[in-house]
Length: 356
Image: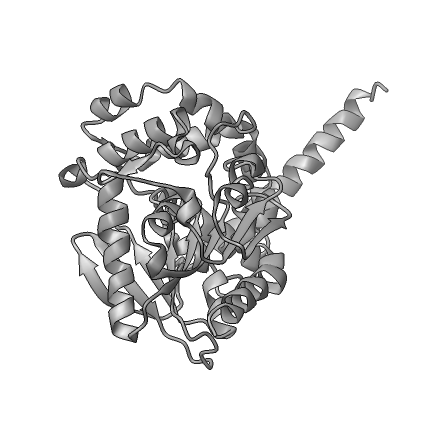
């Protein structure tokens, strides 16, 4: 249908006026924002080695789980995702349901960390945190809840030290890297990671990684910012948007040697599931994982596709193992409403039942 010029002009004028009004109201909303806070659940620093810190969350609820929980996030991005906003915080929900929670803060890698390897993170930092908790609580084993790349590192740790892990819960964790389902997995196969690390002087900046993540779904940002005027009309939606943007922008750089090893040994050679991965001179066998396993994957995850997570249950030696599909994407697991109503209680009850 061809509209007459005067009707087109009226429509254009109306749309322009609506947008202008929204922008004016949005500007007013922004003026009311004094500070954007994330990760507001109270916690105490209980251990530190260099940049790596271990925090213990305050819990005003009754502790129902006899074994403390160590939470391990990815080296990429910050663990604040688990406590991004007060009304949709995985950490707050698990505390409310009776878990005693610790979390590792990896800090921000710099030039002095360029030679840190996967062994440094797994046999060094994770093991140190586990042993601190074991000693403080006088327990032989701890529970582990690990996310994304942190899940991969924690799975390796559990295979090397099954006598120190009571139960393992992995969320959106890549294990079998021989998949063509995700662009990240396809791109990594041909990545010249040595040139990338050397080109950045041994430390890969977070901005470089974020740019790569954006390219996995290039229209995602366009849609997000196209909807921004409407988002800014609602104060709650605006604050949620700003929290997410703050988390995305706060992306640590990566220690070059660890980054190279992760890409080469896992993404490119798939050594973990082949039983060929060595950490500190020790072969990593997933069959050594004999503790209860809860493996959670996101059905629409474009960063860690289900085909990379699901096979873990086939490789471990655990008799008590559960595969749990969560609808949605990689981030929705942690910030969606269903995470509070369904996922949080599932995780809490699972750990409580296996910690008696």
